[in-house]
Image (cartoon, rainbow, N blue to C red; front, side, top):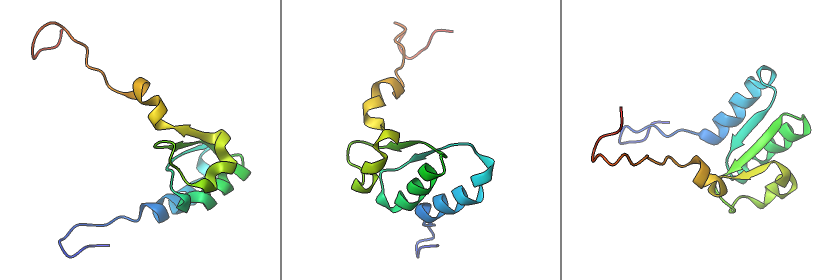
Length: 98
């Protein structure tokens, strides 16, 4: 959908569900990254079909609808330290070691 100022607004919710179902036979398991309850039917379907590997949520604030699927949930804020890029200090200002 194009907005008046020329920007394009995506419909990520519908597109994720649609493309997941189109590609359903082409993957063994899925990782869904969202805490939005709008994806409940997709999560439920993938879990029932043994195709849900993980549901990554941004933090502890995710839809209560997912409580049933808590064994799949990975809270990304708890992984921040291991996922965060940390630039190594070289002792040389503004340059990295060759």
